[in-house]
Image 1 (spheres, rainbow, N blue to C red):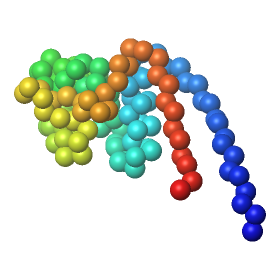
Image 2 (image 1 turned 90 degrees about the vertical axis):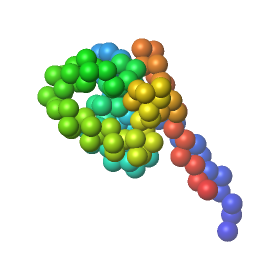
Image 3 (image 1 turned 120 degrees about the horizontal axis):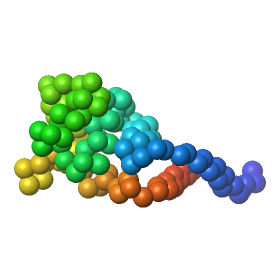
Image 4 (image 1 turned 45 degrees about the horizontal axis):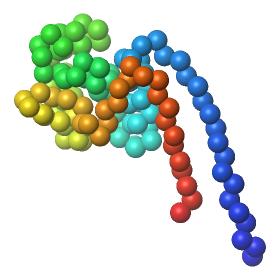
Amino acid sequence: MENQEKKTIVQKIKLTEKDALSIAQRYYTLLSAISNTSLTEREIQLMAFTAIKGNISYSNNREEFCELYKSSSPTINNIISKLKKMGLLVKESGKIKVNPAYLLNFENNLVIQLSILHG
């Protein structure tokens, strides 16, 4: 059997979002999809919001999240607990923040390169 050379296919998709929060939500949606973490929409919203605000520990941040997404404080607490167990959120200096491994500056344009290779 002949050894056939594999070709590399490049597909470019360009999306435009209205603000940093929307970019962050899109990023965490993609991250969830490619890593099979199956985050809910509300969990993705909390990740994105926390990334933009810097933390979800301050009461004014929690209130703003609840108002923006029609959520409640107990719901936030449950989500935080789950995301901490998954390693997506961490407690740092007494504040709940996005794990630095998953934190980007969403004020900038974002280019994601995803390579799926044959083993």
